[in-house]
Length: 328
Image 1: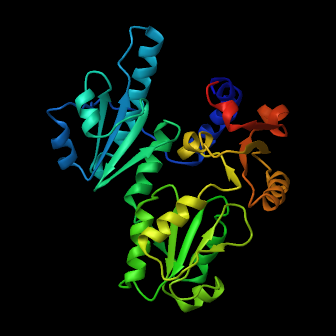
Image 2: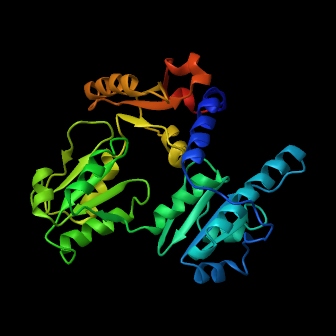
Image 3: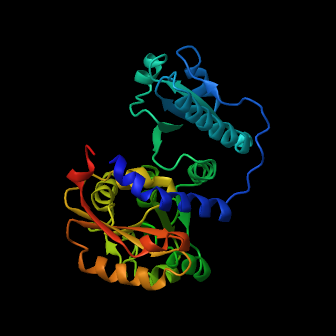
């Protein structure tokens, strides 16, 4: 596994850099300590104090200077995120897997090096690149409503342009509808990784060819959606269908969930394909055609947009099997 990550590292660094350039503007760290060490005495208070609590679960700090430096850099990332999000009522803490083992067990923290976000009764694991801009955008998405409402043609056009994402959209009578409530509760299970939309407008539903209480599932880069059978749906039915079908045939490697994507343990073959970052059009169309033909097969195409500086790798395709990735 390590060897493959070393192969991909130049591309992943480009992902994070380009995101930072187009995304949020970050201030300099002001030196104020906002990230606390979570222990058995203060974790309950921290959970009650904040609407959301973001915890980094880490292995004990080693004597090795290089590892200590890496830990300090991670702590600095968290401090900067905490500074940017200071007015959002989000708490930040660190949990040592050895020193704070009791707390980790109570909070069901399992994977060292992971960030866990506690929101209401949910625990969301951040499975992305641990950079300040990526984590901030992840947390901001979590603060949003789990369902975005589409009311007019302009908003519908914006929805149509989101071809790189999994999208779920339903048509309901009103916000008071029990079926919309089930849809909204299902959305909370996948926030912020999967985007949910709803409309209460007949004109929008007509453009989407949606019937009342019908829900469509849009796979990334696919021309036509899949209608979830059996309307109206309960929360459980929606969660089960989306969980079963959430692994796309073609997907872009994204900073916010790249580890979850890479460690997808479905049996079969993955294809890692490189597309030119500045002009990805022809590359993406080629991969879309390939994905259309493999939509119902146990095959996945993982697309990484690279830069001219990595041009020799841009058109290389690495085919690997899941069992080869495990244990390497």
